[in-house]
Picture 1 (cartoon, rainbow, N blue to C red):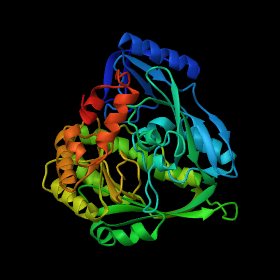
Picture 2 (picture 1 turned 45 degrees about the vertical axis):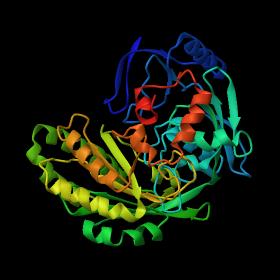
Picture 3 (picture 1 turned 45 degrees about the horizontal axis):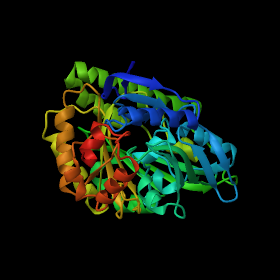
Picture 4 (picture 1 turned 90 degrees about the vertical axis):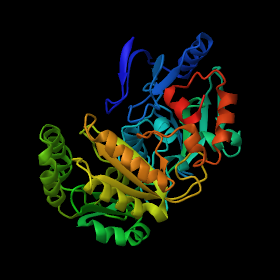
Length: 435
């Protein structure tokens, strides 16, 4: 038996059995034995969810050996990968094939199955989450059988399983629609929060991938405009080694870590340090392979809450959050991240049938302000019709979520069919899906 904890350290289970099956057959045997013994199974990748969505109850299975590309067709762009494949491995393997994911989030540590199951997304008004790139799935069910699904094969399962919360089965293979390798021209700069909020639609609609970071206790923001460029005709001009170390390692990791640590010990330093951090990042432009621009290393541990709010309400929610922070005694060291994404047709996706602005807040795992800060943010976001990211902190229950997801009952019905023994459940799934 071993202790399990997630990346942030805010979710723990003191006694779980850890198994690392070598292949799909061994994994099926583990699942069948668990089902017959009335035990619960959870596959774990990087543990990058902040909620307990991946928390194992009895058995934790690692899919690290069930990894890698199964087949790839450079002509169609269809690539099939095993469920345990980490995004950082996949991105480099795709580059070698001359292919790219259409969009990515800002962290590449997750497994592909975990990323799509929790509704991971990036930014870009014309682009949906990672699950919109899925064209087929193979699911290992609680009875040990494997079902394949796609728009043509078992479409009723495919429809709901693309964002499946880990509640239907274990994803052993994913077929993705990729595209020819492309670059991103990145333009990063500083601005005033009020000005960027007033022109948010212009930024979001006028750039392929736009995001902003607001530094609480200041009126300053960092903006990122990423424009897609074709390869090989686009010359690459990556960030220089020294500049990259200064911005991405020293300021974004080491200085942030120091600020968080000092802020926990001496809260009065947070606000002046926030003003310093907001002014320290200077504008820069560079062009690189897309995944190198989309993703970044996060070495400072944090806990995150993120809500998808209707696009039209996004800036109002951000403004209310700013006012709540200003009126509080909280000392917030982490910037607030704001992104935008397209609508999709995936029933449990936060983007189901509506465009969203995504607002994410962060604190240190031990922050004394976390509970109040997160509660205030949740109140503001839910009043605007917000949908919580499945892998990020929230308190909503199945009854709360039913009005936000019109097809939640369809998902629960499919779950009853595919996992009647609840082999894949845990307390978090009981919270959001009911018992």
